[in-house]
Length: 110
Image (cartoon, rainbow, N blue to C red; front, side):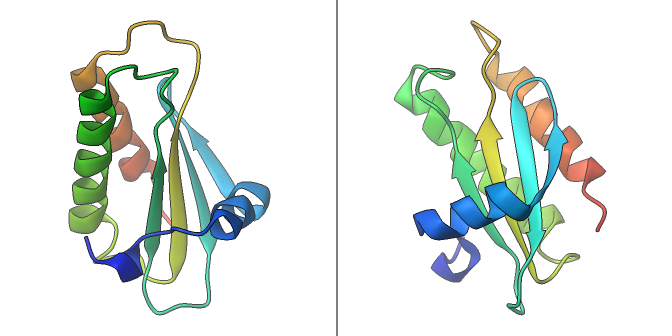
């Protein structure tokens, strides 16, 4: 995914957290906020406490970015998205986590 499609600055994340709409699934929360740009951007924050192995966290990030690139970005322009992991599950399964991400994307209708 290109850099222009990524949220990088902490202020961008804070703005989406503060003003954005929230969609909740068991493993993840998706925040959405309209921006003034011609393209949509994505920020992914997977907590080490929720997914202990770095390989799992990185795989989730890569898969989430790819899913957004294929499904959301062609259809929804001018929005910021932040995907964060949720506490509450001691041993999250990678397959189940990906199903949660897909459900969140399906519920995103702006």
